[in-house]
Picture 1 (tube, helix red, strand yellow):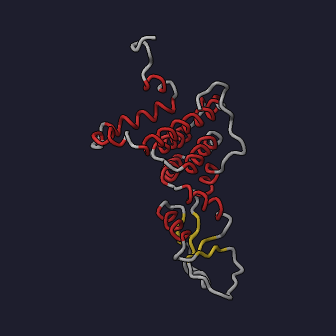
Picture 2 (cartoon, rainbow, N blue to C red):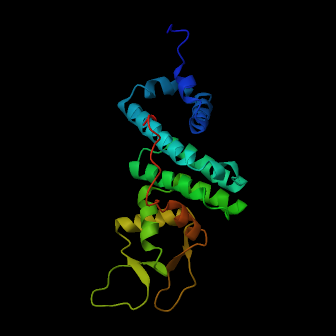
Length: 225
């Protein structure tokens, strides 16, 4: 095959709807003030690692979506927004665990017909910005009635279902991040816990999207991985 007949790199991947979305983002970035930096950044080892991560993630996402053609044909506008924004988010993600959560969000969104318009906006924003560590914390601690940042008190036992976290700990930083994402908010003060934080209403739906399915579809035989 002559060089003229060979498909370009863009043509080889543009047949995949997910990759088309990814390319749209790259084009948008290239048209901005960072365009002059892209050739330099593209030569870095970090850029090559990210390229491989994105390629694998897109392949995994496509495999999942190919198993749900009927759901895709009947997507609500709200489902489409969450899925579309999740695909965009993977381009900015370098953390493997976060990519796993993004994959879960896409699979779970296909089954979530009850996402309201405002929820889709909020969930899309949170999925984009939440870290893997923050996501894991939410999944692990949602069972508590609230979170209280307070120094440890030796010899004092609490009988309520409030999670106490040392303000100087790593988890306190995670709590701060969840506050900025709008996933935690101050609760009405009580005499024994004046500064309790509680999960906001959207967190239950976020958890439904973040939980990883027991088994993902396997890639079709011969599919690129």
